[in-house]
Image (cartoon, rainbow, N blue to C red; front, side):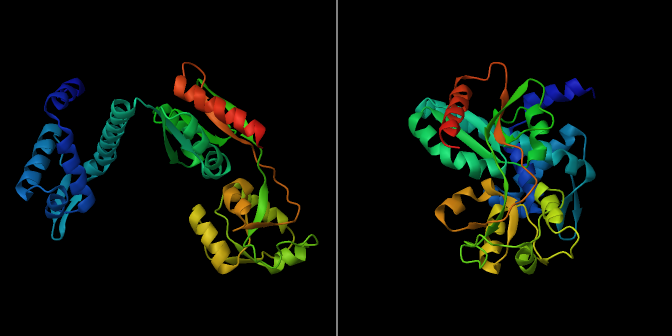
Length: 310
């Protein structure tokens, strides 16, 4: 069968509900569990899976003693089906917003530092001033930006200065950033202006994930010495980092922007000590041509707001 013929047949016969059934079967590992989750009969699930496998000419599942599992072809197809469902859900949300509120939907992706360092301070006032714009914000890993931009999954990114910008996109810096030594407010080194390298070496540190800039800065800080005591947790999760700092009394070397909100609230603090390894600024990455009114308004708001409040 030619690729075009299969595409036309899927357009004519494929239904979103059928795709959802197949995805839930894959996630559940059981026809019976999928039927319960979707409130349909097990024979209906079995029939839909068989019909789609026939239409595709591929076996998506194989049966075994404890249920079913994806075949090699099924493992390749599943992420594509999940993307179809996610896009359908996004379409439904956008239609509902336009129908009920006349709102424009702006899809924003941000690295963790951008969420805590920029968006946390500026999203609420923007939404209050622009009730006709609905912001859909997701946190991403900066390494995903090129692929996400190529797939047109987001309208704007909040990130650091990229090594390579996607074709047709431009970067506008918004906020400087630096590394800091983050600690709980009651840590014995907080509030001192005479902290020495020996003091830092005697403390217990959170292990930074390999490959991030903080890892290199921490290595350079103790160059020529034995490594300091390191706690047995390395994570990119901001929530887990904060919990480890507070509950285990650790020091963590991280961008100050990551914990800006907690530092301002006094629930975390920084240890005063000079560090090297300047960070690239945070800013917005946006299409240069025909970005749309909602994007223009949000971009201009961020530029003006960060200029007033560094």
